[in-house]
Length: 228
Image (tube, rainbow, N blue to C red; front, side):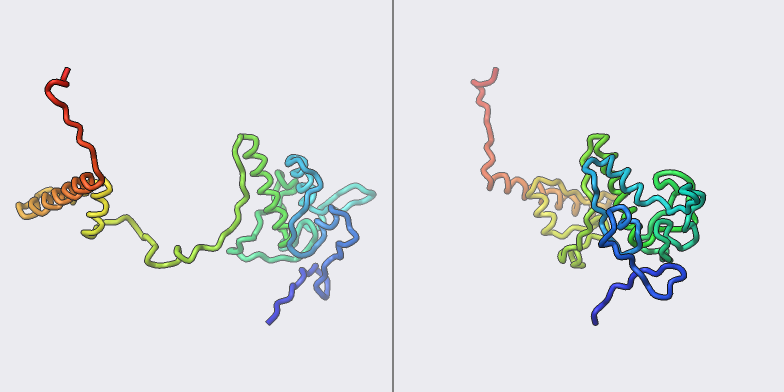
């Protein structure tokens, strides 16, 4: 079954509509309703790019004699930029924050962002983080989601908590690598428990000694005539 893109609907429209952006300039095409897109900056410097994308996300206003007097789409579930009707689910990862009337500051609007302008707002947030990191001499890399590897999904490779028990092979392997493995000592230890603990400690020490001898550890002896 093939899936087709369903364009957003404007309030009052009988059929879904998407503005044809082929003959629009960069600014008008970015502010018009449509599918999710990545905004291509005109400027190359990050601070100028921030002003550019902030202008894109400013709420649309109504004007009288070229004087703005109110916001055009400051209504619940309406995109404050293009007027697209959008109801966000509470658990939607793409759900944007409440729009501010000056984007970076100001009072919260009653409307929201559509999917297209929510994606542009996410791009705006990443640009802000990049500028902040560069001002403090830090490197910035955008988050790129990756699918989990097959090995990480294997239940046998998942560790649910700290290890509380060790097998005999684990103790032998750790001891040969230089680790000192001691069993927990009870507050009131019987003779049998003490014997069991000492046998394990002795066995671990002997395995480490054998490993050192096998690897050819050099033992330096000092003769009596060499002492000063």
